[in-house]
Structure formats: structure tokens, C-alpha cells
Length: 402
Ligand code: PMP
Ligand code: GLN
Image (cartoon, rainbow, N blue to C red):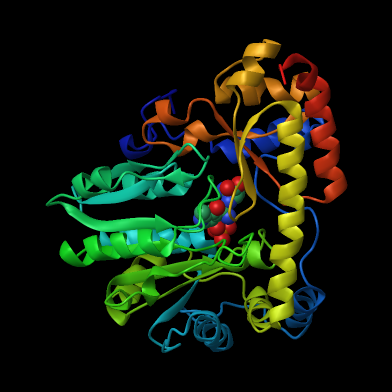
């Protein structure tokens, strides 16, 4: 076959290789500390790991049922009732997916027609734009930007005007990657009122639901009055049980939304992860102390990273949740001569001081809004975070005026 440069579908031109793959490869190549891609560097709870090992030994190694094994679907329903008071029928209202990523793709491919619009807060997790593009639909972004206190907020007028005649879905992510924002009740009520007024479907990605700090409460928008019937809720075990490589996720909601997303999902992977499904069910049934300790230890890690980044001179936005801390690199770049746009800053950083981060720019539909922002992951052991902080301080602190 002759060399062709038109092989990739036009829908995916411009998507290239994900930033996570690029930056993790750079970390391996340079031997740098990887605070880029969000994956923990310690294993999850023993009960969860042991259940998976036993499941392999017990022969759970063939295709699981299409919607996922009944025990995990029941565990998801129990979890939604226990933490949020939501009642779900595990047979019709819960489907297990190959991570949240497949649930998002299934929801968007299963519900969108060409020309439909999706209102989505930016920055946004990178798979959203790709799945919307694959569905031949259009993402209409609404900016989250730091206010004077460094809290990421949106402008209500921008949200209102983003919703138009073609809007079918409002895509929400709370707690939010990469900003670490937890949408508050008043914000969710405003979003819910607009969804009801314009008869929108809300798809909500809640993979960081258990990783909130400082008493911030995660509120699923499906719990607000009038919202369950129009909301598809997505989550996954990767973050909660430190098993990001297992890719066990789920979606839940009213029959019609779950059925539409499941119809697309079944032609993506059909099913996945047979022995990991009972293990994640065991995880979802762990006691309250597990979930509290998880958030508490991550909050300590966040504090180490925030202190380290501030000590190096970065303008640092303290996250209310998630694995991530976002900084503005401009002051550090100006003082040190490092590149002042996030992408170049991140490509230079491992060579400069042996640390890998991720540029927020790739999470924006309008990249100019995120050009100076960079994301560091705090889901690492404290000595790893401290070592990275030391390197950053060594490279930059002396340069930045206090
Ligand atoms: N949504 C968000 C906001 C994420 O940060 C991630 C990355 N873990 C995903 C979805 C993908 O989750 P999973 O690994 O379960 O596919
Ligand atoms: N969710 C993780 C992050 O935001 C990793 C996702 C991925 O590698 N695709 O870093």
C-alpha cells in the first residue's frame, strides 16, 4: 500500500496521541518522576486484590454477561443507595463498562445524532471531545476559570447562552478533572433548572466521587428534584480502589438512558474484566472507614504537593477534590527562563529537573484559556511527592521573587 496521509477519519484529525501517553513515555525515557498521568503508585485494598486473584483461580475467566455480573450491578445499586439515597433496579438501571471511558463513549455515541450539541464545562477530560467528535456532534464549551480566591467558577450567562436549539446533552464532571472543583449545591441547582427548562439529558462523570477534601460534599446531580429521570451517572473503580488498570466502570440511571448507552457500549467492548468485576463489588461494599481513610490520605498528599509547588514559586490553585493540582506557570517561567506555555513547559520540565506534569491546554476546546496552566498529580507516595517538590524548588525557587 502506498503511503497515505488521509487514512485517519476526518472526525479524529487533530486528536493525535493522548497527552497521558506522551507524558508517561517521556517520564520513562528521561527517568523523571511522573506526576503527569493520574495513577496511584500503591496498590488498592487487600480485600479487593484478593477477590480478583480468587476469581481468576475459581474460573471467572470467560465473557461475563453483557450488562456485567449481577453481583457487581447489585453492589453499584447498594452503593448509590448507601451514599446518596438513590434507588436503582440493578437489572435495568445499572450497566458495567470498560472503565468510565467506555461509559462516556457509550452514552455519547448511543444518544447523539449528527449535528447535536453537547454543552460541557472546559477544561474537560480529553475523551469527551473525542467521543463527541466520533458521534459527529459538537461540543459547546463553558469556561471554568479561577476567581480572585483561586476557586474555579463558571459564568451563568455563558452557561445560559451555550444552550441552544440543538443542545441534547449537558455533560458534567464533578469532582472535576483537571481543576479539582467540586460543584456546589447552588451551582448544581442552577444546572438542573436549565436542564429541566430546556429538556436536556445530563451525563455526569463522577469518577472522583470519593476523593473530596476539607469537608467538601460530592452531590450527584441525579439526587436533585426532577433530575433522576434525565441523568445518566457514570463512575468507575479505578480511582476509588487504586485499580486504574482494571478498567471497571459503570453507568446508572433511568431505563431509557441506560438502554441507549448500553446499545452503543455493547458494540465497543461488549464486555470486559470478568475476574475484576467481583473484586470491585467487594470494594464497593467496604466499610465507611475505607472511604474516609482514602480521602484523608489523599488530602495529606495534596497538602504536600501544594506546599511543594508554592515553595517552588508557582501560582497554585488548591483543589477541593481529585488526584490533581493545577498551577499557573507564568511567574516561574518569567523568572527562570523556562517556557511560559504549558505544553512547552511540560516538554522541558523533565530535562530541566526530572519531573513530568501535564499541560491543561489539551483539556480546552479553546486552548488559549488554558495555555499557562499545568497539572500535577498528587496520587503518589509522600516521599515521591516530596522528592518532586525538592527538584522543582531546586530548579525554580531561587529564581522567583518571594
Ligand atoms: N473521567 C475522568 C474525569 C477521568 O479523570 C478519568 C481518568 N481516570 C476517566 C473518566 C476515565 O476513567 P476510567 O479509567 O475508569 O476509564
Ligand atoms: N484519568 C487520568 C488522568 O487524567 C488518566 C487517564 C488516561 O491515561 N487516559 O490523568
